[in-house]
Image 1 (cartoon, one colour):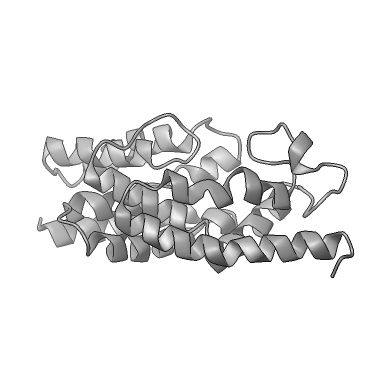
Image 2 (cartoon, rainbow, N blue to C red):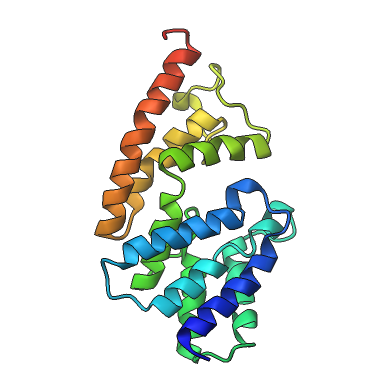
Length: 213
């Protein structure tokens, strides 16, 4: 099987894992990450087979995690990726490289991306949480999990949760900090541009919420 054939075969297999997955991490998210990865990879000499196989597989466990069936979709996804790839018999080094990318893509875990491909996937995935799409995803995620948009009794200064107890606090806790967590120069450039869109929106939202505007 050619490298292109492997990527397309994995893409078709991966898509089957996204039935009834919540909108914030659905197949459309994966496709956006693929487009962002393509944009970033144009700046580097990456192994695009490893990168795009990992792109299609990186969130295959997300639906199971959301349903409470597994604890960590990145770790489970890495194991499942090995099982999927066994059907196509790629080189062992390719399988291991893909598994590392899948394990390391998650924002909240402690797996540092050690390869260029893992850094590109992590950056592409993080970029989809920024900008106009990121704003939409944040509010969608809050709706999925029953979080309020904003609560004046939960200011960011007293919110001791890791991800923020409201949608607005999540912007401060995670979204607006993403540019500092980017791994590539190309990723940082796009992240800074997207952050520049989100920041005034959050400021406007907070001012409207307090009746200033």
